[in-house]
Length: 320
Image 1 (cartoon, helix red, strand yellow):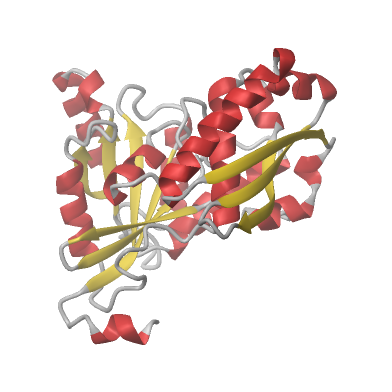
Image 2: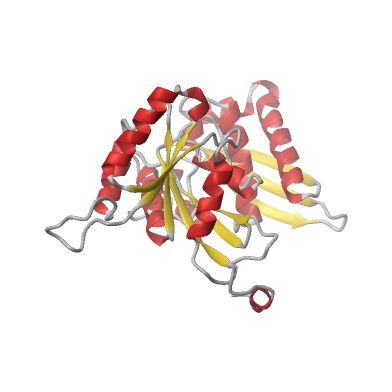
């Protein structure tokens, strides 16, 4: 804990962690960005965009809320899938509060039911009278994308959620527009434990710059390539060189599994990779508030998903 932080705060301050969990594409990352007031987690329309836990730091009055944006929880098939789902549940276990985000347009079917079962196993829901050690914990529920659902359907969803006994509070929000997010932020702020802030006031995330660059490039790739290609690639920042003029030279490598995928990313005459690089460079410059000279390379590395080093970069458990 930074002594300077303690010196500038009094007994009214609060700080803690909130794990934001949910199925893929529920809007978790969009909500975290909205709560923080800045982009700290990449967002695309594709499922499983978030691969590792991302920390976004929000301020609300005297409270500092560290939001753990976790990978979407789904039925894993690959090693990477298992590691991502494990990271999501680990994030929930480490937090002061758990916020389940549910896409109101799809409701509680499919993966959401799997998540509810996981919460039950973790002790969320009504206390079992025959077992004093189980149940009794409560999570928060955010029904997202409510602007796309008619009110009777929303009320039915809220009623179903209430009957599970798992949720202390239910919020109806639109993470995209911000509707209802202020009330949710106020509630989260009040749940944080009393104590000094954990991070400097101007810090928005704990993501290292190298990982940030790789994530921004991956976001632009997800927005520009389709079908199986986004899930067959990874991005690594090989070098980050600050320059005397305040800019930075960044070199990143995009790894794919097959030569055909490399050709897709490059595009005809290299036009697609040029477009991806330009979009990533502009966003990085805006986020970092200084010019960025970004150089992208595309290489084939069959089996990168079975390389333990990749998992260490994302803070994922290779052996899960």
